[in-house]
Amino acid sequence: MDITAEQRKKLKSRGFLSNKDGKHFSARVLTRNGVLNASQLRNLSEAADKFGNGNVSFTSRLTVEIPGIKFEDVENFQKHISKENMLINSRSRRVDALTIVLNLILTTLVSSVTRILPEK
Image 1 (tube, rainbow, N blue to C red):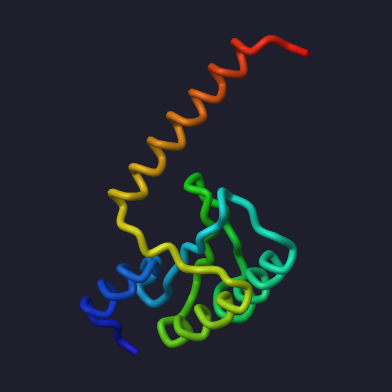
Image 2: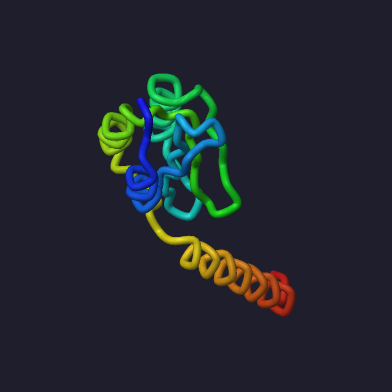
């Protein structure tokens, strides 16, 4: 099945990035500050095996990436992860860059505050 440029664009806006082979996609799954519970981890593992290539990657943006998803499996993948209340990251790169900058500022601020606080 050939995937049109319009279909790729639509999937990208929904958080599914095209893989280099042009036939598969990676889903970026949102976490709550990089934290997943055991049920969510099991669900993602099952989804990676069933719909992807079996790999699960953790990104620097505190999301989880599942590569190797076939075009025809995108909807089923989303339904599967929604069982554990997980969502695909459909934000734009601009917002992601802003998130990285804000995380860096917050980390620096927390680090500075902990250095000046007296030890107990």
